[in-house]
Length: 231
Ligand code: PRP
Image 1 (cartoon, rainbow, N blue to C red):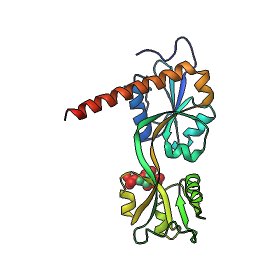
Image 2 (cartoon, rainbow, N blue to C red):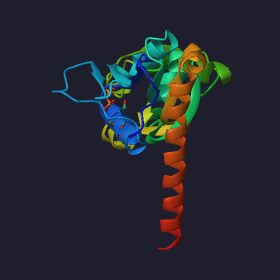
Image 3 (cartoon, helix red, strand yellow):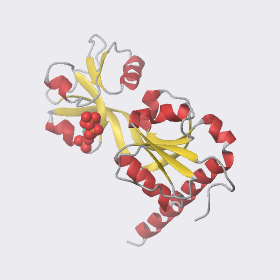
Image 4 (tube, rainbow, N blue to C red):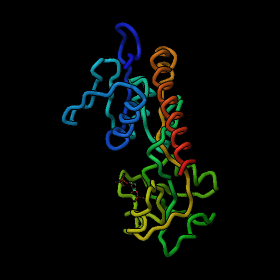
């Protein structure tokens, strides 16, 4: 494996969202030829590659855009949902092929049509108050947004909210709680983000990472298309 930069440079710092997305990101980076971090027992929040060219910072998913905007990390991986909700100013050089899901509006299955009437002022529970407020504002609906930090599906079940806005992947959680999707607000997948100054100041190392990922993803896509065509 070749190094990301020659000589004694500062390592490139990459913020990853702790959990499944971090594992998928590390696997993708390694497949693209970037150094793997030396993992310990999973408690350490900063892990470096053996050659010390890359340092991975494991952050709470919703904090990744903050680390990158402030330059605490040069690059980061997060979901488009987190990035848009954060309203942070970062570059978004590359969409990544994992973390697929959608941010949806959902309502109780027995009254799916109440949501968007102009005369009503729905109460909407969500972990995404900014995106939810934008969605209703754009439709002229005066919604009351109730910000929660998890188990949002509880909202309508306990009379806290009329509707919810939350991530849907398989739809199992909604179904299990008697809710149905009524609108897709945002199609979500993982995205590589970059600090705006680092994009220029550490140009060589940053471009190498983006270039390798792009190349790997293009080759992978070609292979999949080729395999698909031979079935
Ligand atoms: C996410 C999301 C939904 C669920 C959707 O929750 O907020 O609750 O997954 O997945 P599904 O459509 O496949 O059922 P998460 O597990 O992150 O927990 P949280 O609700 O406590 O944030």
